[in-house]
Length: 135
Image 1 (tube, rainbow, N blue to C red):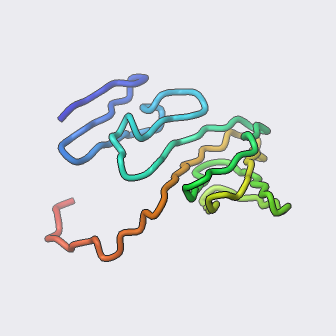
Image 2 (image 1 turned 90 degrees about the vertical axis):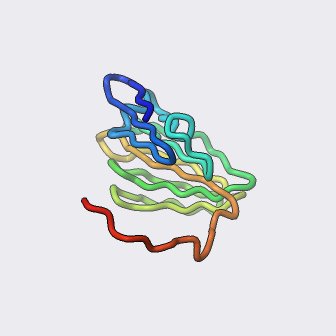
């Protein structure tokens, strides 16, 4: 098992697994890169910590679908079709490739977002049930 320190929080890397006990282990600032820190190779994933009233650039993804999970705070998402939607903690936003969008934080506290992206990522019937592990 390999262990790395980031801001005094321990990231644990094993054979085929990785654990970050807190997003602060991924660094500080707005973008917390998950892929390189935890060896994610199957899809794009980042944690984004946005300050109150901050707004992302208006952008789109040409090939990947994006999913945003709002872990903390509240955001307003605006789309190219003219619609705007408010999403709070526990909410999810799915944005198809090619659709322009922007995110603004509407809460008084920072918004913590888990952002994932991928293309053709569904693998149906890939799970195999195993014997239960002790907790």
